[in-house]
Length: 149
Image 1: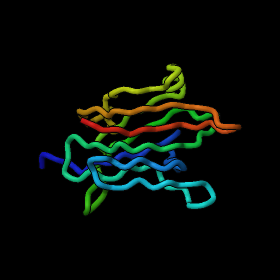
Image 2: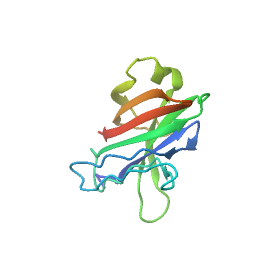
Image 3: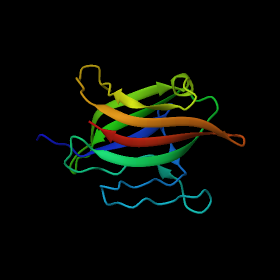
């Protein structure tokens, strides 16, 4: 069809993780961000809004994720939302804890999407900012899902 309806899901060690921080809505997209406080509102899954009919989606959403100290890898899946049937996986980016922690300021770059199914071909990149920090006894990841192309 020449376009898709992309959104992202963040997984840590193959599990969808809850986000606790608010997300900043897209200045272009017209959806407002909501603040989420632990104990006040339930945690929400780490999923961006869907950008309808776009091959170059801009999300501009930022999440704060609480991580287990022994987590191994983080993956960002880009999916195509379908109104009928199951959503299609476009591709993913997977980073180890060591890759994210290797840079003192974290990761801030365009990363190529990899296929989820080895028989599929994938084109495209996603712009991510990832930074791990310590907050008290917790390990926290700031995850900024910016855009894709």
